[in-house]
Length: 500
Image (cartoon, rainbow, N blue to C red; front, top):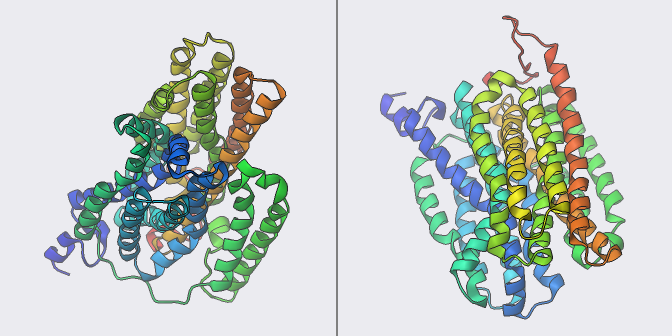
């Protein structure tokens, strides 16, 4: 292979391409990842104005959020497997083009039905984008550079959810009137178009793997199982958990059947949708996936609880409500970038420290919001939120790195999709359960918003404590796995990154 071919990044191993080109390509994928994840939470502050402008019911407008999140989660694993099979660059570019078109369609929606359909298709495109992001990192980077790249990717995942209410409130403040909500979608169009053009130029052209038939039975079992778990949560605002509770055990059963089917396919030398050996042979993948799912239950749910407390309880505007939680986002963004460089040195211990800081910061925030005077509550809570944000930056970013770094490149898409599916399921549980608990406390205690926010945040801490238990078990296991030089090492599984 000649030098020009490697420099162009169009053939051969993209990890051999010049450093600058690979990092430019990474920023294209991070921008699109940030945009697609931000759209999970950014619309929450605009739901009232959407409802008024489109003359919609509360239940139907909730599908603007739920439909996107549901479609996003359903396609993650099949999309990752498809990228592994037919080419990540191709799937990424087509999905990004679809995302941009759907954003324009959502912004121009004349009716609530149009808007919901546009959001469901937009969520599907986002679900196809997400696993390609982590897979392209696996493909383009090696060694310490891979850890740094995953650090930036983890920072993107972590702060996008935290910034959603802030960015949404800012857009609504700048775009006056009931029609201002449309700019929440329109803003994706120029950003996405530029990212698409840069992606065409910068993303590496690497020959896809051998064409194989997609595991259709596995796809059906996983999709219906995830749908069974998420559909009651999507209808939570209209009593869906109570009416559709039977879908939870049905979903669990289908996922058990999915696991059994995947084991059977792997045992017969087939190519399963999600190789069970990811959980058994890839060191760190199973605990990392479990930790991520548990953490996102608490992490995702608190933003809606804080928005309800600050806007309904304290009378803040959407922008003021978003600014009140900005210290968490700032701490998370800064810590995530630094943690990406420290993860190779400290390993799982870094997430243990991070989870302890999250517990400390959010527990202090809950106490402050419960007892502080109304006019100073947000200011007094800011340092505690900042500590929680610092901890969060040391959880999400390092956990992504440790979960995916030993995954072979040929399985990178499916592995990244499965990791994010767990996070999306955790986020769906949190965003349904914690606001529901908030309203339940209000109904039982009149209009005591302070008690409601205190108990809701304490409930979120239960999920964070469960994530801490997983991290401690994994860290303890790693302590007794010394490397040849006596330093702690995370042992690779049967598949190693060098064999990918």
